[in-house]
Every structure is written in structure tokens, then in C-alpha cells.
Image 1 (tube, rainbow, N blue to C red):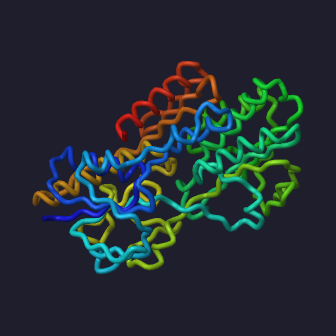
Image 2: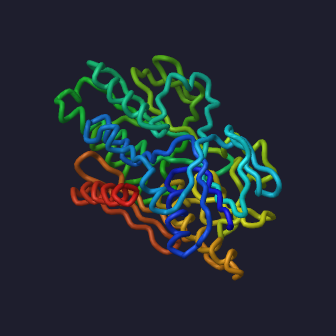
Image 3: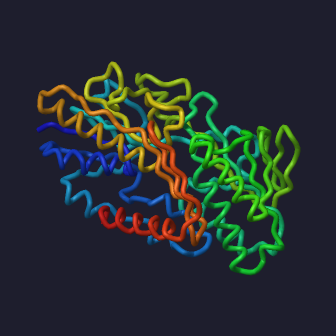
Length: 375
């Protein structure tokens, strides 16, 4: 029987599995990942305010794998050989007839002193560290920012940092101690979040001004120290630093023949195929795809890519020509604990709806629906 190997157990990987079965692909599917647990990263923003606790965002995948006829192999990927037909892992080689790569990206941690910053989207422990540090602080300065990959315009994840920023502001106000804190948003760009569209950038900056959040924009970070952020345009004293670096490809790519983009991602075409490799697809953050420069690195885009990859792989296995192209679409609700700013962008439209309570509850409803599917 045909064996499909899926690398990873995140949004793109699980959506690809569901889509393959929906296309009636009768093949063995093997998942290679470090853990058989799905972590719902978008809701980490609510952990500092205790709107969510760890167990609520961690979903054991044993039931999902059983439902979809998946064999799980607990291991980390170490390389790829033989045109994609062999995956080297920490638990030995895994052979396949088709490969879907969905291992996610890797944060670029080259800034000196990066250990002094908390990188929120690394996972639940980091979100809990923010919660605990906030509890311990009586006052001071909190600096929040994000960086980019200069060789890969799309390899940036700024949305969650706006959410942590606004969420911390809202939380401190609820606790009636906002007056003891200074919040500073820093970014090397003069117009941060430009990929969301010009209306969104203006709206986010207005929201910061309305909330009394200071900005330090247009200056590249140089290094972090235990009590400050040092940029080319000056220093920001800080009692806590939250920073999201830009993304690049996974480290195991150094042990593979796969083509890479200038930013270090797996090169893909508009059908999520890896050029020059038969039945090898890539979805999500680890790939570099043709499309507009604002195309996001987010779960929704990973899902769209996974749907296209699964449809094309199903076609190949059935002897048909792959024809499905993924849609470039940005859908983001910038949550502020009780309201949400909706940002939508496609190649035809760019829509921004200012803070609405309905959007906060819509984000929570989507979380419940998504997790229910995984459970």
C-alpha cells in the first residue's frame, strides 16, 4: 500500500491529513513529530490574563490519529534523502511514497542577549512566564516588539505581539494598576504591520496612542540586556521584554537536497509542490511560496496551503494532473481581551473593522470549533 509521510503535528499537518481522507486517499499515513499533542498557539495571548490555562490548549492526538488511520512515530526530523523518499529521524529512517512537510519555521535568534527576551509563540511555557512575571511586577516598563527575516518578507509574525501588547494593557487596567507601568512598542519599521494593509497600520497606531502606549519605531534592535532594549536609535529601559524574531526554515534542511529560498525556507510552487521532487509537498511556516509580499505566516494560511497540497497529492496518486492552487488570504482578529479588530486581506480586498466586542467572541468561538475537530 502507498505510504504518505507527514512531518509535523501542527495546523498544516493535521489539515493535510483530514483533507487527504476527505479526498478518499486510501493510503497508509505516518506522522513524524516530537509529540502526539496539538498546541493551539493562537490562544496563548489569553494565558497571561488567565482566560486560558495550559491544559485547555493542549489536545492529545491519539483519538485524531485513530479516526484518520494514522500511524504516529515520535521522533525529530534530522534530514531528507533519496529525492524525498527517505526521512532521517532521531528514531531511524522512515521511507515513503509521498511526503508532506509541515514542520513549521524556526525563530532567528541571532540578536545578542536574546535570552533576556520572552518569545511568546514558542509555546505554553513562555506564555505562562509572561503571566508569572506580570504577577511579580509592582510596576516598571514592559517593551514589546517583533523582528523580521530581511531575506523573506512574509517570514514575520507580528499579529500576536499586538495582541499581547493590548492584552497586557487591558489586564493591567482591570487590575487597576496600569498607572504604575509604561508600555513601549518597538519595531525596526516606521510603519509596523504593513502586511496587514495601510488602514490596519494606522488603526493599530491610533489604538496605541489611545491607550497611552509609547512607540519606538524605525530603529533596528541591536541587542537585548537584562534591563533594556538597545536599538540604533537609542535605549528602552525594560523590566520585561517580549520579542518575536523573524522566521527561517528548520535546521534539518541543512541535511537535505531540497531547494531553499533566500530566507532559508523550503521553496514551493503555487500548488505547494517542491520543484524538482516527485510527490513532495510543503505547507505552512517552513515553506516559501509565490504570491503577494503580504502573504501571512499564520494558521489560516497554513490550512489553505494544506488543503491545496492534499488535493494535488490525491490527484497525483490517482494518476491525474495536480491543478489546485492555494489562495493567499490574511484573516486576523487582533484581540484586546474584550474586543477585537478584524483585519482581512486578499488580492482583491483589504478590510479593517475597529474594536468590536463581537470579534472577541468570534475568536473564542472559532477556537472552540477548531479544538473540537481535533478532539
